[in-house]
Length: 301
Length: 301
Image 1: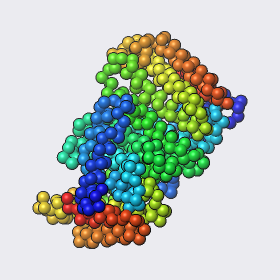
Image 2 (image 1 turned 60 degrees about the horizontal axis):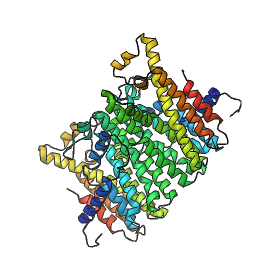
Image 3 (image 1 turned 180 degrees about the horizontal axis):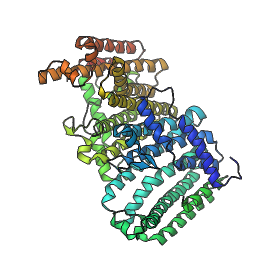
Image 4 (image 1 turned 90 degrees about the horizontal axis):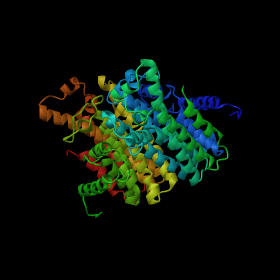
């Protein structure tokens, strides 16, 4: 990667590498029913920011680790993220027909195949993660740590728990803590996993893993609050309606509890906290992580 | 385990130990939304033969391995089996209201929570499997092998692929090979995983792993053909209708292709092949595996 490249070029270059690897991530030689393979690949290659795998690679880079060795964990986290979108879009969950301008998986392949494609991607993420040991010489005990953390942060006490709390809370949240539980687990947990996995593969110390965790928790929450703010502003511009009407639709967001200005201040504060964790962690190459934190805060894209 | 015990007592004793461990397998100290935890535990503790975890423990015992060290893999495979039942029962899949006389998960907790409970169990299986390294000193590279094999045999080229082929084939299978693909992947793959995982933990040689794989493939297929036979006989007795009417209902089974007598002969032949694989594998304590093969063939229970 050209060190002169700006953060947008950096992101685009990594996203390109990740997509090339994703294309061949379900081995061709495996006998898999054609419709299942198509359904899996449809969602895996449906675009998206590839933020989580980029964070895996950027964390490894901050410790001067090898991108190839970090790639299996990067692909694994994108598979987990993709399965969660397929299942979240199902009629029994959010019932969405479109995602990023494309029909959702179940609208193309039917509900049964969408459930199975999600199950297949979730399972394949673990097969993919362990290839770090198989093909890139990452020590087996590091891979065991990564598998354990992925299963925890993507599972009942992590992302699946966040999604369950979101479904259960649809009748209306009454406390900011409830919303923060959802944001932390639905969003931050996989981001924390990504950063720590990249760090582990590059030989992070336990203090550096803590710094990556703090960085990830902060940028994950900032990212989600920023999403809430952009949703509100977008809705106002689009619908010409005041913020309060979102509340009447039962859409409880961070600005609902503390207002837009305080929410914006919170995003800035979390971003500063994230950067300070990295700056205090003794990372030899912290630049891209710091740039990513700023990029996420300023995104209106 | 008392060596005098018959195979039924042996199975009952192991099933009891497995159920005791399953009860506490989702850590109490994890913060998990209450409804999600309930939904997971409802299906995990809903009974069943516990055949797969018993095979993990029996394979370890055949090599004089420690049952405690094999227990994490045993619990993991039962979690995978349980999640697959929850998802298979969903309205978009087999649409079943009851399983083993109890309401299915989605009838009690709703479809959204059933999907998430399945996702949580599938993910937690991997967390559970790696506890063999964490708590029982199983070498990390053995655990990496187990995780890789579980992800393959439970995933797109394994159990999920078998289920997808079953859904896709509901319009009617035309070849015995198609039915065998479904049986091998929906049923045999997890049984093969179970036996090899128990073997790996007990230090099986590569030839012994091959023997366990052959044993598992044969008893898995025999088990499924036996199921087809019992379904037909049960239907005849219950409904007083000839075998052929099942075919008209689009229920394509092994006896449909080769008849009941040839199916029964096939079960006996597969069982003999399974036992011969074990007898030729140099296992110091093969007795329970051999008894289990006979038990599965003769079951009319």
